[in-house]
Image (tube, rainbow, N blue to C red; front, side, top):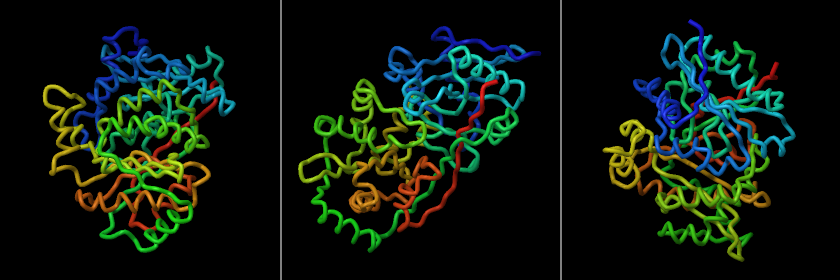
Length: 378
């Protein structure tokens, strides 16, 4: 039977689109399901602020009457303008190990992009860098994270068969928490703090950090991430959404701000306990009992021994000056106190030496690699 592609046209289809990933990976020990309600908000064109500058459609693939694949076709107009490209993105792609299915999904995105004047197709990418990106090509036997994509080993083989080539790679590290702050690391942090008259700021109230620095954190992200692959600046509405969604749920012991003498934010480090096992137990649902597993992972003493480094951002003029050392000199004692064994770096661009240099004083293991693919639209 031929593969049939159906455009998602109502909420029932959108729910099928989200649930397909859960079904395809329900017995996989390494895949970490997204929270269902978060996915509904992300893909909702009325609720996600990214649709101020993005357009998208979602597609389902059927074969023999059975759902066998899904894909999102996305154009980020702001990114295309920033990088002078005409690229359509494929995202949230999943499929059974069937060449007809993967080809039908990719051809659908190509045609959708071509009709809108696009000349290249790339992915997997989301609407912005705040979404998970990159197809796993190494580390299939490693537990995924809340912020990344897990996929079966057959996925990249399908992409290569379809004529895609490498556009960019990200690497991921396990960074083992040391018994003590490395001496050189400590000296650098003390030196840079005195030299630039920097202050470390900590908060105990989510409302207070959102009030004082919520906007500044995401403006700093826009500055620090601007040169990175495919980045498009967050809009004011996106910033408002992220301040409201994420800052209130963080354990602020694991959030460190660095300011200059005038109180201006110049660096931020945000981390949290890994939610991977909790999300697996919750099966992507908060109700009826998923909330318990997530709260246990976030706040109870018997939390995960794994830490997720969600975000490190440093103002461009302070990069390569040791400010990262100042962040981690504050955070390492917290990690030790809370009993973490190692941190997941999450994605770092393969060629981003500035980011990877910050791990020079730690024991690390590069355990995953993921790729964005690209090709010309025929």
